[in-house]
Image (cartoon, rainbow, N blue to C red; front, top):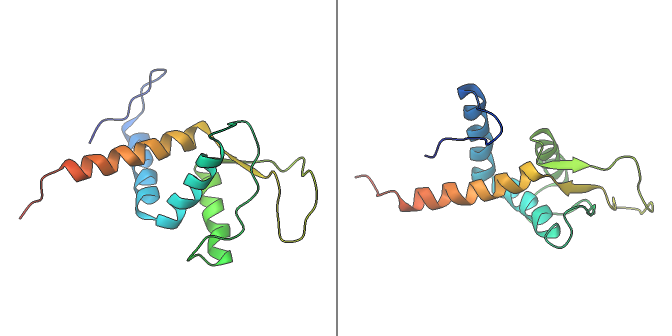
Length: 124
């Protein structure tokens, strides 16, 4: 596994472990990964644009989807626009979320972790 480094500052071993745990959660929880990837894909055209909240995710109950959004917010992978909702709509929350730089980096890091695991030889 590659060490986590920062060009700006050294990351403590405790924080590095915490980051790896968060990335492991993102890698292991398919619904969490799909949700963050949705916001990442939506940001491809305009990183600064606010995205509508995902209200349905296949195989995920509404209460679980709310918890997943909470995890993304707590992990600083998603930011919330609570100050200016353009139009109130029943059953929708428009222009509510956008992925953060940390969220984009987490998605890339998870792909690298998966590639590293795929390259590791199987142990008998």
